[in-house]
Image 1 (cartoon, rainbow, N blue to C red):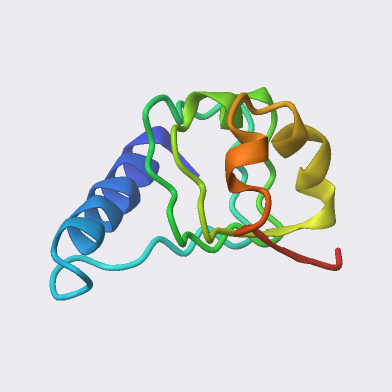
Image 2 (cartoon, rainbow, N blue to C red):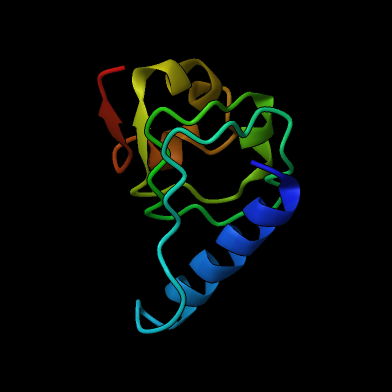
Length: 95
């Protein structure tokens, strides 16, 4: 996924969050290759990131509460400074 497309998805997701789901659309980043993508200050609340390829860039997002991941993301999620805050809300699916 190119950064421009990721930016568009994240903007629509932010609009979805701010409007209570009336406008924009929930981010569906399943199977997206986000390695090296800029997730700085991204609000990934409720985003579907199953099978997304992430790396240390997940540390730049500030919220992934209620997001969906597969077990491959766990090593990166555990390194996030807010892991303890969000860990009970994250949904983990088998790879």
